[in-house]
Amino acid sequence: MDTEDYVIYGMIFGFITLWLLFSLAKILGGSEKFPKPNKDHESGNKE
Image (cartoon, rainbow, N blue to C red; front, side, top):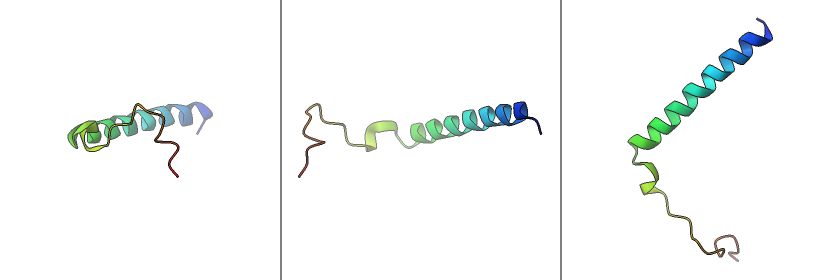
């Protein structure tokens, strides 16, 4: 196969993968199941 074929198939595969990922996240409830990030900068300074 030519390089162009790999690029086209890569773009199609990437698009389908992202579409499935976002569809699955939407079905599972989106960001409701994930903790909301803190507005403070303390989350990175845990000791």
